[in-house]
Length: 120
Image 1 (cartoon, rainbow, N blue to C red):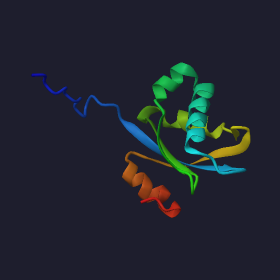
Image 2 (image 1 turned 120 degrees about the vertical axis):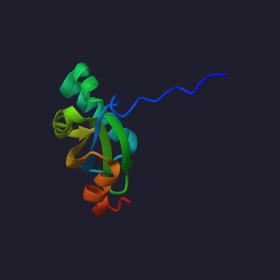
Image 3 (image 1 turned 90 degrees about the vertical axis):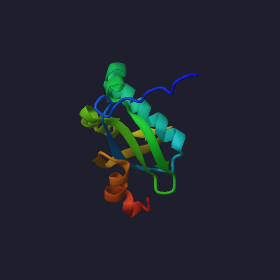
């Protein structure tokens, strides 16, 4: 019988931060467009090695309010925020990504920064 794989203890796991963002643009954007824009901005600004260190991970996006959450490594929050500010267009439409705030948990991020947009 196979044993269940062990999980890493909390002391060895990566520590993450969550960034709440809002898209301000000419039109409403889809989730896949935003995901690709964040990834492309990270690669273009930070390069492959920098992106590997930052570990950006798209968590959630609400298409009605144009707000979302992205996760990154705790040490490289400012690098990802910088990469997001350099986005000027998404799929040929003018747009900017506005950072609303940073938190250590998704729950606290929703309470502090996304409550006004109707997130629960």
